[in-house]
Image 1: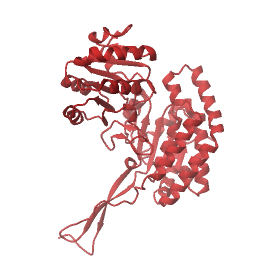
Image 2 (image 1 turned 60 degrees about the vertical axis):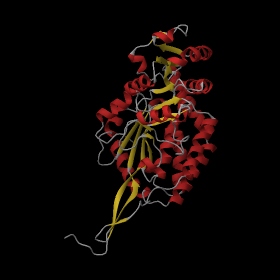
Image 3 (image 1 turned 30 degrees about the horizontal axis):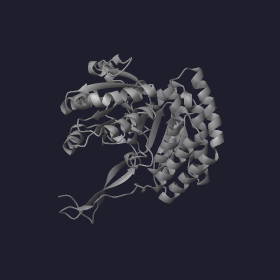
Image 4 (image 1 turned 135 degrees about the horizontal axis):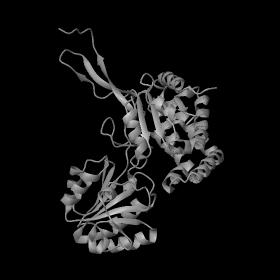
Length: 416
């Protein structure tokens, strides 16, 4: 049977009407069964994932892409655990914020409602299949999942576990729809279906985000690149700074909350950077640095503006020694992608000024950028990290997948 993107979207829209009014208990029961199915089927999922990994290696995909693509029992259990954290969250649908009484006696409030049909366009991220499906279901939305060719086998295996749970609770399977054909023409068509699709969220490389943003007729929330900065202030605890730097850069360099630029106050550079050089040599981190930075590193390259603007997603980093706090702020404001920025300092005034002056989606004091994640910030999981200030900003959980409608209660009032 020939696949029809339009038909899939229409079926998702119909399913969204059912999902929007499902009781919270039924949604949670379905989500728990999804988590159980994922754990019970990890051998099947890993077998499918191996097909994707073999193809990825043959195609010469980057180590960062392969890391995102890789599934193992621990990662599958983490995906299932994320679903269970979503279950524990309050159901936002139907929640009414404060009702106010107007002078004429009418009561006015706002009720949270689903967005409708959300389309996810993503690359080598099979975990997104489960995370997005669970979050959308909890928030009363239907979801269309268009993963990349490189993760198709993994995504379909995960989706099978999710669909089995929907069938168990007699929920329309179109509530979670996986595009089975990754041909780009279907993605192009999806971006035009304004009658059926309410929102598109792209997750992937810079090229994918730009293409979707520039070509979609459906509203888009951008999950742009993560050029995350760490600023080590002159009042920093340098031991903590080194631990946070190593964690942020080397734990999983291929993720969007990994550090890409290190800024160091010149008063602590001579004490801090030799330790950085030692650890980075052990970890194999490539350095692009300013002229002052080059004195501390073997084989470092002189950094350009392009290096400070780069999302490396690898064991690679840009470093700059700054004259003072203001120069650090100016650098971040120039090169930030709006994702996550961190300051290490013992000075309360500096930390508060950093929070006030930096308006990225997540601003941290004395903590690793790796905590810029929906699960770590208490959202259960995330559908992505929005760098668009409208309609959501930062890690997007269940609350971000809703909107509000006005509720007006009267007793026969008419307008004079």
